[in-house]
Length: 121
Image (cartoon, rainbow, N blue to C red; front, side):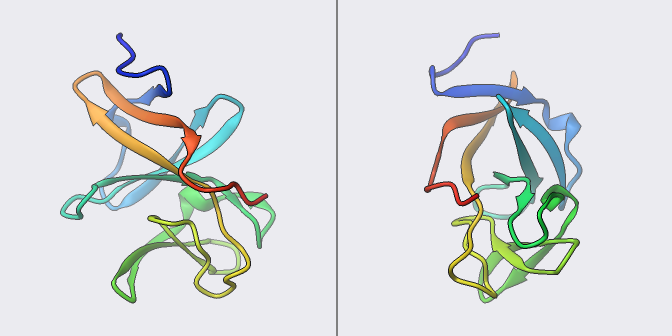
């Protein structure tokens, strides 16, 4: 499989994903939560899997929500909502999660090694 750019890593196949749900993938030593949301502008979103409020790697198991015009993942622990676009926490602006660039090609799902924002935690 060819790497489209040195900053991108193949992490899985679209067949590994479940519509309107999350799964966990590995990006190097990090756990990443992947969300496939058909009908949205990007359809494929990737965030860190670590819930900074709950202190556990559980965000891929959270519930997707459309709040205030944006897509959020609600942590299964304390129900804090994190933006799939920015990683910002709706309930506590001082907290955020990393957000990764994601794309899919015929070869599979690719994540960009660099985080789209400064990692928090």
